Image (cartoon, rainbow, N blue to C red; front, side, top):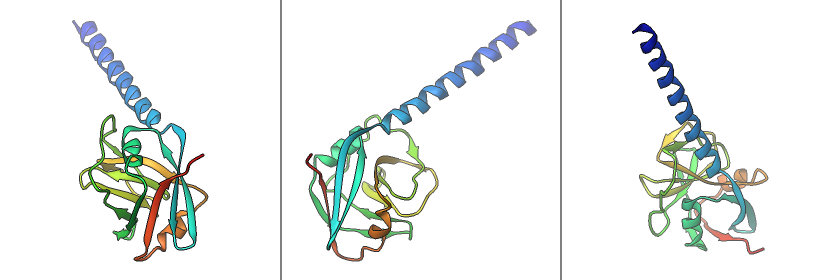
Length: 153
């Protein structure tokens, strides 16, 4: 009987580890880059970002170009609200953003561009990343209009 319980416990442990590995591979797949480039422009400044190939990013690109003002939120990120909520299809439960990450916060329906590292947040979906340290320029944007558009190659 003891051998049976040990065997069942080991089987359960291996199953949990296997399933955990499956979840991690799904998150890594989401961050696969497929050469979708985003131009972010304000004043005389143009920044470039790479968008990840996932349903939420593709939904955002269907609304481009977007011209809007960015709001500073919590001295950590710049945010704006697209005209409608984006899809969450296939999205993981959350994300731990780093400086330069472009994300979507599904519970509120806003796009958040982080200019500081932040902790894991449930409902946060990675959309892409600003290139070449351009986040420092975006961080200083005040109440001017910012345009987001796909770069045609």
